[in-house]
Picture 1 (cartoon, one colour):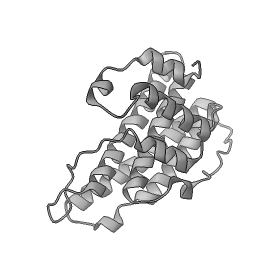
Picture 2 (spheres, helix red, strand yellow):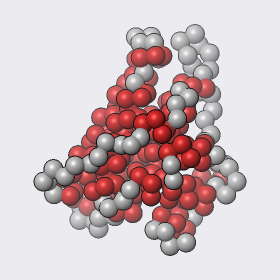
Picture 3 (cartoon, rainbow, N blue to C red):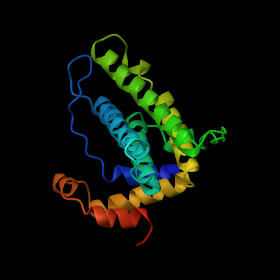
Length: 204
């Protein structure tokens, strides 16, 4: 799957209410989408970090499919952020190659997740600076955030033996399983996690 095709497919399941106001106090679709994307990037990289924590500290099995899933979810929010500013995802590809560092696999993955965390934290901070009037809309670091997230996701996937194309394809397949027609709150709350897992494993 190509990045622009993925971005279009990801748009099928977007639902973003107008909740973020511009500096004149008017609800803004662009800013609501950017904040939605920032919150989503934070959530997904945190879930990936949580899996790592449970493996490294609690001794739970390492879950490579979960890496694939969360990286795909991060890419969904990258696609949303770029859609908010009318930029095609393909403009940020190819991602910078992931280079072996000599560190153990899990430490390389941990570094990639920390890069995601730094990128989304700056993005969230920019949105707060905008809300308080300290910067204008053009100063929100959307492109650099998305570029850094894509590079970090690519590194995480490479470490676990996956490609960006696989992550995008299986993310869309999972969302097709969850939302056969379009996003609904009911479907979001009543997920068939086993079916989604089989889809991510490419078992069906």
